[in-house]
Length: 390
Ligand code: APR
Ligand code: PHB
Image 1 (cartoon, protein in one colour):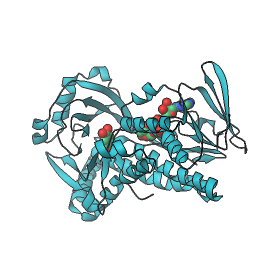
Image 2 (image 1 turned 90 degrees about the vertical axis):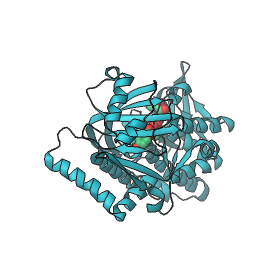
Image 3 (image 1 turned 180 degrees about the horizontal axis):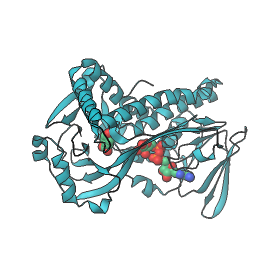
Image 4 (image 1 turned 180 degrees about the vertical axis):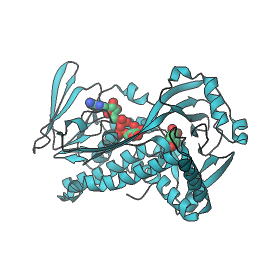
């Protein structure tokens, strides 16, 4: 088989790129290790930058998002028993975010690929990129016990943090930057009315908490927990009790609880691999970088890479212009590092660090005071949260 672009990974990055390229007449194959049910069974974040929402519309996948998603023009930060609102629209020149779950977005992308007859191979075993340093790269994989091969002009590694793409770049080429945080987030999804129509990020001495939502009947809550905790240690009741303790009293009293539909612990990590291109292999999304979820940048960072890659590939195929491909890594990383900075900053601002010295804790308070006392600081927060320009 011969295709122009071979994509490893059928998560949001790989699917979105494949759909955007299809609309420009560029053919792709997507090789996904797991079944579609498995991919759609993962519960992930759900806050989309306005530029990402536009990219979904450009991919002709925005109809359900626009119908069912919620536009949020503000959010709350709770601390010391109160909550303060940041008006994202006011401080970002009228922009906002779209609250729409990654699972639903991925479902929309799959449907679009199906409708267009796109090739998405599920349960692709032992996917391997080959010849990435040559002009004739190809992919091999196993499908129902049979060895398969696709020759392509470019290979996109959109196979997440644990994928094979990044590992196939020779040692010594990549530089990796990493910070592991000494805690995780315990998340609960429940079929209950959200306590607040807008997200509440809460700082508390007992640890961070977040009140988020998927819709007005589906809530998503998180609390910071030590890395040693296991999900089995947390009954639903224990979770709700701890969440209440970390919220301002009026919020805690308004909280509607119910059985958890999903409960999991995610460790927090910041990670970037540079460069994001080696020969004919281009990394995108979680394959190249990870953020802690605090600023909701994970999925958005993936979309940012896809924006640059999409334009670079269209320029290559339609305009014989390779500048976008040549500069992909620099351009993508420039934006990625800003998302890293914002996620790191929000994580430092709102979590309780077990090894913090009194000076650190005092500084953390001052950082919050400054945020709420300065329109410039709120402006900086808002422009980062709604998404910096591409
Ligand atoms: N071969 C083929 N597919 C693979 C392989 C492999 N060796 N390894 C992993 N995959 C698949 C995974 O099963 C997954 O479906 O690649 C896909 C990668 O998807 P994600 O991990 O969701 O990564 P990405 O598409 O970059 O999505 C952006 O950012 O912060 C996060 O929550 C956010 O998951 C979202 C991600
Ligand atoms: C979520 O709804 O899962 C969510 C929202 C905002 C974040 C992280 C996660 O910063």
